[in-house]
Image 1 (cartoon, rainbow, N blue to C red):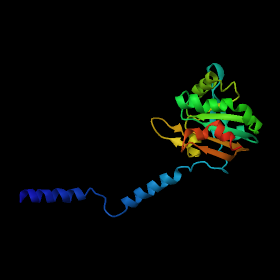
Image 2: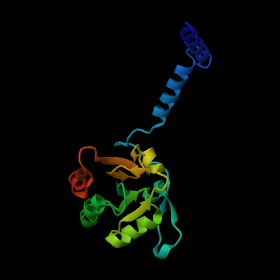
Image 3: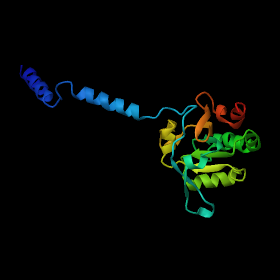
Image 4: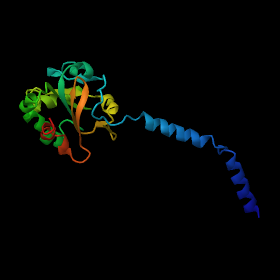
Length: 198
């Protein structure tokens, strides 16, 4: 009997610290809905690329240069491809080389500039572009250090660090005309797949 009374008292006292009413549940739901609504939708054909300041590494460890993406591509037909990480196997062996090899063909299709983006810092991106031959081929390597661009495009991979999902796109005067996702397979974003649609 004493144990039953003690148990009853504990349950009663515990309820005093439990929020009453339904106010707490709707609050959590509202918060969750806000987070979902704040997540950007994945970029698609017809979208205008956002004005985001990226970083371009300079030779000899010079201070990175701030580059507004919208200003850089204004009035141009450009190819933009992003990789999860500089110097990583798939990006270094397949994705980047495909665009290095395709520079002449892309130019024949009217592409005036090719841009490679990753969330690695500007120094790493400069080193990758230089050592891979990508910079010599004319590809512009830009760092999205805070993943701001990746987030606005709805293409962030969360993990130990924010990385950009693999993708490629063609934009004319800042408007996306072709978009290539890696959702099914990585090769869908490589240069041959891009060229086949131009």
